[in-house]
Length: 438
Ligand SMILES: [Zn+2]
Picture 1 (cartoon, helix red, strand yellow):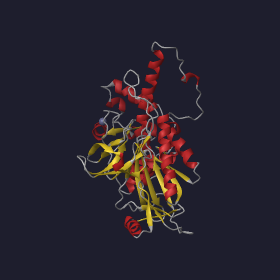
Picture 2: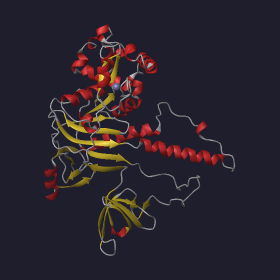
Picture 3: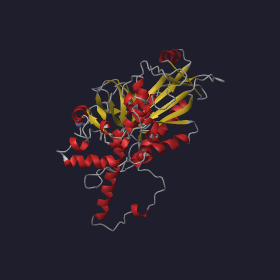
Picture 4: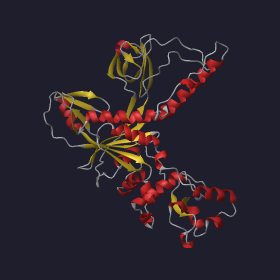
């Protein structure tokens, strides 16, 4: 079970407890609900000098989804897990739309408006808004969790593969063929370099095997530059042929493979710019931060026979991963970033002209779009109880999106606030298992 976070009356974080114990504390009036997501209770007394079991936050940053897990290093217990879905793509779309509307407006037959983007300067190290947002999401959640439970360390997957492991000559033997750690680093490197495809038939999402471009039996080297990825049929057909023999009927592909083989992948640091920026921000929080490589994560996960999910990847980040993990009945939270609404005052039509009147207030009758509400309607055609996200309307009758669908025109006097919108939506369960990448 994902555990319940506990803070005392001074909001000092205490050890998370089993949901059953939390229920008991709530029933006996010793605690109250402090936050719904992640579920946190607040004790009605202060605890002096509590004995705390230190936890570690583990993060596996991804471009679409980031896995987050809380692990007790001493016991190997996974306390809580979540998958955070970013809104980078949406931000890019919104900015593209705004740019188009502004350009359109400048070029209409009205007075001349000089473009403003050309006389703005960017600070050094500024990331594009879509990437910046991904970093901010993760930092927000690390900070939130630090306020709710005793965190003493952070682990973050920093690079896809460990360049040092690739460069050290002593690992360039048969080791990688026998599933040693360095083999995972090599495989991650090759997956990135060869774009997760078979080099000879472009097959994707099939198991890919290591292939020596110039075969070992003909004195081909064991260096990573001589390695590529091939699907099982291609690998068997190629057997111990040299690539020039194997591809003699397809000179175009041969040239491509040889050219790609020559070009080393750009430095890992450049590939992972966002991750290093995230690392710098997390380090500034003042806790010891451990970095890990994607190869190590995969090695840890495969050795412990775990599925490929974002949150399980997060659990396996870094060398600190306990030898035996206790993951019984953990149901990860699915957290989706939805932002805090739009600052645009008027909606536009497709020509960029205002379609609506300017929005007066974000908050209507104490409610804001995105708040979680419960509405108990006692009479009329809409009689019933509805729980869900509210979309406010200035006229005072709101729409509520429940699990059964959207209910329209519910008057604000029926609505009771359950939780304020905090820029994220939450859902527990519905485990998404990813297709294997290798
Ligand atoms: Zn193939």
